[in-house]
Amino acid sequence: MLGTCKGIRQAERIKSAHKALQRSPHFRRAPERHFWVSSKSFQVTYATPQRVLGYVDKRGPAPAGMRLISASLAQRIFPLNTLLARTTVGRMKSSGRIWPTPRSSAVGRCTFDTGHQPNQVALRAFSPHAPRPIFLFFAGGLDVCCTGRRIRCEVGQLLLESADDVHVDVGLRGDVLRSLSAGASLPAQPCTMKALELLARKRSQQLRDLVGSLKAAGGHDDANSSKYEAMGRMMAASIFCLCPAGDICTTSRFVTTIAAGCIPVVICDKLQGPFGSRAGSHLLPVPYPYESFWIKYPTADFVNRPAGLLEFLRAMSAAEIAHRQEALAANREQVLLQISGSRRALGFSRMLLTASR
Image (cartoon, rainbow, N blue to C red):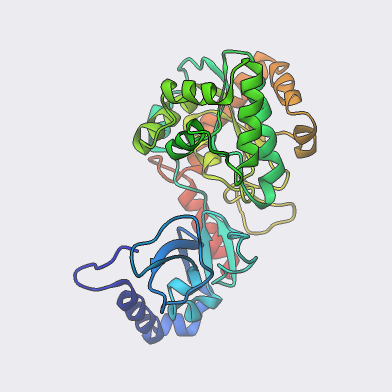
């Protein structure tokens, strides 16, 4: 993906790494005691027709003589993946991407969740005593696959909330808004369309007029840097941040919420959190304290009646909110690697040492 680096291409770098590991007496003696961190399980990229790495991805046009494909991690790092089959892999999403196939991104003997890189604006904007005028914040797409499909589709119902302190942004990109304003439909985004139609009826507007007002309001264009900064600042100004499942339970939103000091409202029953311990697990000498600050709202309750979540949060006492905020501020360094003096790196090392014995 990066092309050349000091005149050496990706394929050559992978082959060099493969040869280096083959020569290493430490790796040959105990490959299972080695670990590494991977940023992605798959990559959408361009390739020539002769380079068949996986299924054809038809989401966008490709340059002349190329086609858009999706390649698994194992395919992208071949032949290095053959040596790494017995290692431990840290990933942003420990279970990998469910689509196109359940194990298309498997490389090591086991994986663990290292969490995502948080929004850096949110990380810098955090202040334990700053005012938080936004009660509940969410920004993101509504049409996802797999684990969060039904959950995200119901998030659109929160657009009907009339309170000024609830901010829901359904993640409309500039190209989507341009298509809608031109009268085109979005057959591939039924949940987004459903949410917009609900909002248009609530405001007694035509859909085209609603889309026009959204475009005029800004924040929905293709200026990714401005949207990134706006999201970071708004999360740092929010009491609760909704963290619904996406393709799987783990999302970058969860880590950014913690970075912002915003109480995570998790809608995914099986989420453990980065380095989260399960009952009876021997891998973590020091358990991670998510239960002290997050709120796990039952998925079935949310899907059946999204408004019930707002009622639940509104009923929470100021004392309990303050207690969770204090616990979050006290434990951020256990979750985020980017904080100076973070204890997470130490816990990470201890976990790997324990697992390899």
